[in-house]
Length: 320
Image 1: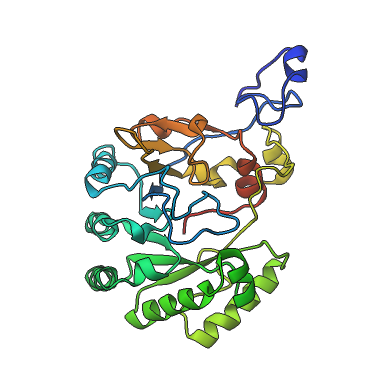
Image 2: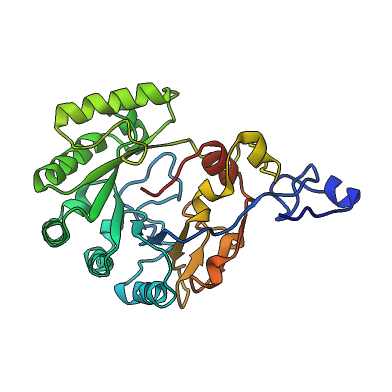
């Protein structure tokens, strides 16, 4: 990566995360090249059946800034993957609550039929538990055994803390959905949060006890099956990532999420979907990379607090 030179006056005038190439201290900002597209995300729409206290993407029953994707809109991306022989192995769906999208089962089926692993992020609440959706999930699981996983948002293994984040009674409703998935034999993973200061070991021990009591076939010790996400506060003071940080931190650019994933969204009022660099930056047009996967193959400049706290310093990944 070539170092760039900038005038001292320009460096002194910058604020953190303001310039895509230069940090506020005048150092060259780190960027991440696309090492190989492994996971393609689709945001099915930002509408959700609940409103969490700390939602990464501000999903609520009223937020339709990202509208529902359709099966016809995602097909061209599968065709592009096949045409360009891209190394995609996983198709992942997020929201909002994906099962509010009326075409969620159809979109998952199209991905499975093309041979991809499918990951669906859900709160396992009422949208997933509608009879039509449950019938569709059971049908897909029978037709493509072991190829589809539902990652359940269970913010904490304790009822009171989960409900503190998601609303009174949500823990019990989510557990009921997880029990249905367990009995239907549909593979599950869990996404938890680290808002309450538990250590990683404490969190995993708590989830392990819950999974054992509920007979959930989820490994609490496996970061791919029990993902613990850090708190995301855009107002927090986090360090900028420079080109020197990789060696200082002992990390590699290719291990950061945007080295192997992209996300497709459709903005309200837009004529067509676009590709973004990251699942967490859905509203920031600076991270919009074009309409096609080929357009989105260029490097990503780590010019957002989430890049530092979530991906580089937190080491978290949305993918399996």
